[in-house]
Image (cartoon, rainbow, N blue to C red; front, side, top):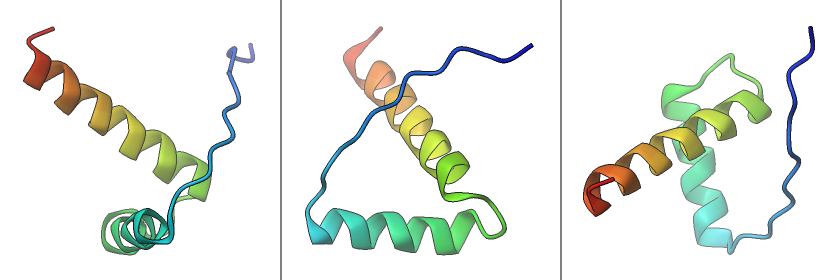
Length: 54
C-alpha cells in the first residue's frame, strides 16, 4: 500500500543549501536526497517542538 505524501517546493538561500549539502555529506552518505531532506526536516520539527514545549 502506497503512503500518502505531500509535495513541497521551496527555494533556499545559498548558505542554507551549503549547510544542507554539508549535513548530507556528513551524516547521510548513501541516502537519497529525498530521504536525507525528509530526515533533516523531521529532526528540525522535533527540536522545534521540544523548544516550544509541545
